[in-house]
Image 1 (tube, protein in one colour):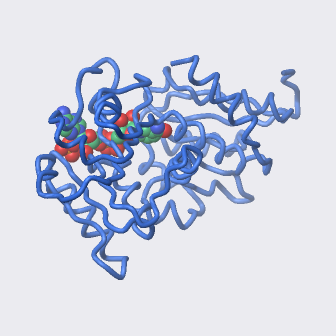
Image 2 (tube, rainbow, N blue to C red):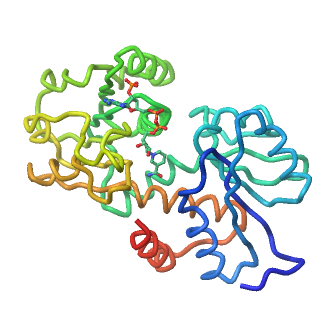
Image 3 (cartoon, helix red, strand yellow):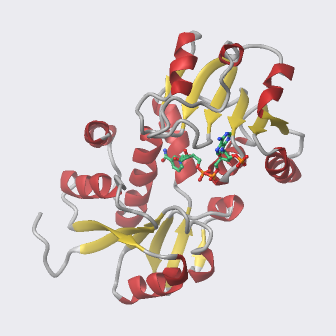
Length: 285
Ligand code: NAP
């Protein structure tokens, strides 16, 4: 691609950002769709988030992705926020408007699009979420009006309780229940959709999974690990060994990027192009 005076600039702010795959996604999409846009990763420390957002706007930057640890910290510097981002309380995409950036959360629509593309629907399902961090909370918010029941299992019970309370407060029924990790034994049946949203099992600690006992995996119909490095986590191996379907978080990463790119450029990314970028992402892991 030739960078010229018309090239739109987008990027990622976070800390650290050196290992990000987002430039691969966005520069790849720009090339495939012949959009004059380039994407760069910018390491930004905590105390510089406000200056970074204001500076980016002053420089005419079209859009930014925001990653750990700034997804909440960036909010005071926005002019506006999309409804879903407000509900989740975290922003991963900034879109330029006439008087500042508008914040969106494309992580959750990204996960949902990834699940649909893998043929997994949460509608009417009994869902177990492992973890109660930022992403687990967002998953619970997103699935609250879709799932039949959501069980949030976390090492620190209080964090799961806080999420369950919040989710139930805006649902007209008690959809979410907080439990400790070992409490899976209290659940009946064997048809659960499990979203693995802890960071246990992430490279280089690939021999770990938040629940070790094989009995748990007998309950899993489909398992979605939000980790994508390694490509097959121990959680996924155990789900498959017990006869369930298992997926990693690479498609979530892909689709959160695609939705951000669509917001910035107004273009629509076809499944053929998405597939090409996905293959490149897989090769990069
Ligand atoms: P976070 O806020 O730091 O939460 C981490 C969670 O993991 C907490 O529930 C924590 O439990 C649990 N945990 C950590 N160590 C544990 C251990 N040894 N045993 C049991 N539980 C443990 O992290 P996050 O931002 O929500 O991210 C969660 C995961 O999502 C990460 O793996 C991240 O890579 C992944 N992710 C994927 C994508 C994607 O596009 N695929 C995007 C964003 C995030 P406690 O509450 O007890 O500490």
